[in-house]
Length: 109
Image (cartoon, rainbow, N blue to C red; front, side, top):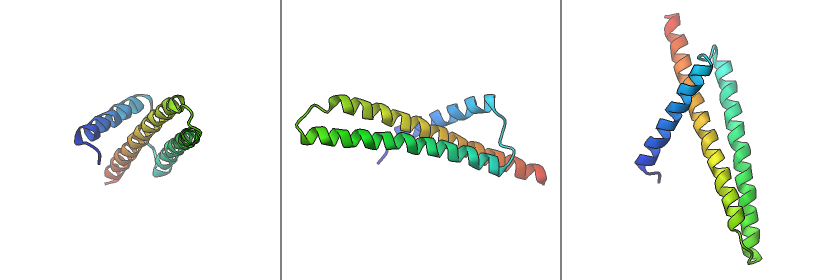
């Protein structure tokens, strides 16, 4: 279970990421463009998560050999931070998609 304070902090990071992205790039001009950007962010998240799995496997291998796994754990921690950052970017792009689609839909009316 995720603490509500953590969820709020992450939501704030998503909002900050979206604000920074909106300063650099306009709203999505189409659902296709938005979907492509979201997919790219999700792929980057998946790639980062694969690195976490690799570190976890190395930790397990070290444990089985009674070797020190602390260095690998640090690398795994750092990889998980990258996963979190990629997930925040993906969430920001999901929100940008929602705002962009709503904006375009309301313009048509």
